[in-house]
Length: 383
Ligand code: NAD
Ligand code: MG
Image (cartoon, rainbow, N blue to C red; front, side, top):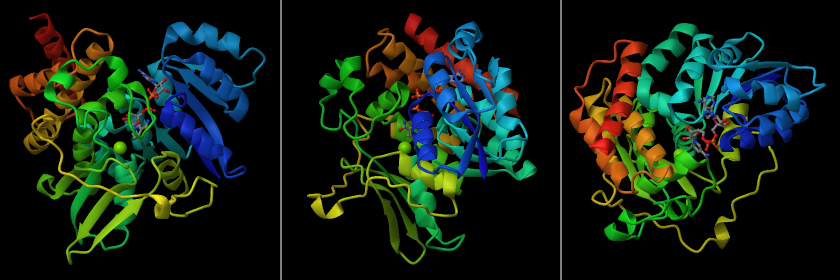
């Protein structure tokens, strides 16, 4: 039986993971659950899934969590260090990495260093420190399994060929709420509009990233690190129906794709049951009732995000970490009503332009670049 540690259990991916667990009684044991600050939801999950240990990152919330869990028999922990400890403890065999943003880097690394099977939804750490995460996994014999739907689709499709036969990867994206918007409409977009995703229901940060296509930018770098494909062979197509999640092209020209409803439970389930496929009773794809599937080239002028990714990816070293951190900071400022929507592009582009790329020697270099980029974005906003 796989014994799970779910990092970020109270979020969108975390809750979907627990829904998959619920579908397979006797198959998984939930060993630990962690959250940032939503102690009410964490307590509800603890009462339903009976983990031995739970942790909340925000120390100020631990009292409230203990009160919520009065009479409960498990162990209650708090702080970032506790989360890293749960990710590495021997009693868990499988870690689901579903924290949002750079905050997931150290816990995910700690799981990899402990040699776990790690299902990764939390793409930002891979973008920041892909090579360090790979090295940690190799050294400890850990396995990384993609949960992000496009990367799960690449992973599933790539199994139709041998190693070395994969030539090209095509990631699809819905295009987000501004697929057909004018530049002026985008500049004036409110948070409410930007937070309305046409096909997926997700946490706030990734929803904004989907509206700017920064999510696809992060996914380009994620795909490069996960599958070892060069940047010129990673393509993005807009596909508003979100049914074909990714396609791969092999050396003989054959194209293989994975299709499914826009429902994260399927890629989560595949990562959890891999290499097996099991029937979890998820809704099936009624492809025969779908009118048309459309594929378009993205508008690289209105969405400069994709070029940020190719540029930062090719520059390598600390550049992807800067792209990621500048974006996280810019999204936070947008959600706080401090900058307008299209300023996100200026801020990410500005930070990347001002950054002197350094080789990624160690974790400290990455964390330095992350801090620098956030400060640079705040400086640009003050200026
Ligand atoms: P979310 O905001 O719904 O949930 C984030 C989780 O992380 C919550 O449990 C929160 O408590 C926890 N958290 C936040 N800050 C933390 C901190 N500082 N320390 C510890 N825990 C913290 O986000 P989500 O939509 O579930 O996305 C999670 C990750 O998965 C992101 O990296 C996202 O890009 C990726 N992803 C999400 C989807 C999706 O459909 N939601 C799809 C593909 C990939
Ligand atoms: Mg995705």
